[in-house]
Amino acid sequence: MSTRKEPDVVEFLSGLFEGKTTGTPIAFLIRNKDAKTSDYENIKDVFRPSHADFTYQMKYGIRDYAGGGRGSARTLLPCVVAGAIAKQILASQGIEIQSDVIQIGEERSKSFSKDEIERILSRYREEKDTVGAVVQGIVKNTPVGLGEPAFQKFHAVLAQAMMTINAAKGFEIGEGFNAAGMRGSECNDEFMFDGKQIRTKTNHSGGVQGGITNGEDIVFKVAFKPIPSVMYPQQTVDIQGNATTIEIQGRHDVCVVPRVVPMVEAMAAMVTLDFILLKKCNKI
Image 1 (cartoon, rainbow, N blue to C red):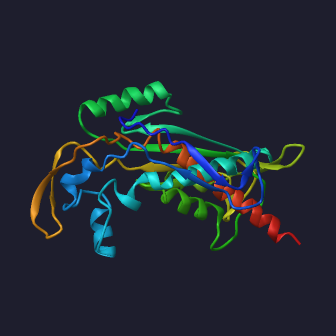
Image 2 (cartoon, rainbow, N blue to C red):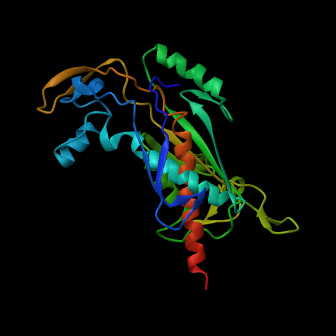
Image 3 (cartoon, rainbow, N blue to C red):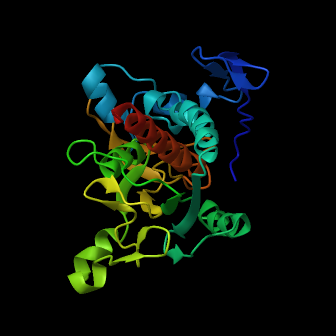
């Protein structure tokens, strides 16, 4: 789904031996073997619309124009590796994380298949345009009691992690913005006893109440803006403020999906594992 060929082979340098962690820091390296800095030469002195070029230049006085530097989503690749490790630890405790692409542009689905995603993205690719998307994440079998009531609310930390992902523009948990159009009698999650434990009949809260997990599935959505590297001529200015026209070239993706899906899962895994470890530390 991308014209770039990025094998992304992880080279572990320390912390693992015969498939197990040793207790020392896990260090790893991922080499970008398909980088082409020449693709960015024509835009090194201009600000690409809706990219981080302008803000980085103003804040630091210098920027890495070849690939976007810290503004590139590739900088989150180490988080995907760390998240994969976190998912293994969570799985040992019966906690599962899954995600689905539920919206691409104006098209919606409970879960788009790989072929459906490619069909939709092909249309935008032919039109030399890009498109946004929404990814839904679910954390299953989480214990009750993760999160704090004030500055470390579970959903607040989860939101911060998701909004760290490049191109993320919106986060909601449970009913999210839909709750604003509901009555309390519709949105409240009534409690019941299922013979083994106290549960809720519905899950409008998305598994979190008062900033603390209630044992139900944690259900959240993350909205991503269209990738700003469109193949259309756009008006902008150069670093001296002179008006100019920019036409971006190179091998740019049409949409953040499906690349962003493992990022969402990784962030959810790390946040959940962090709170589980904090809960163990807080036990008296």
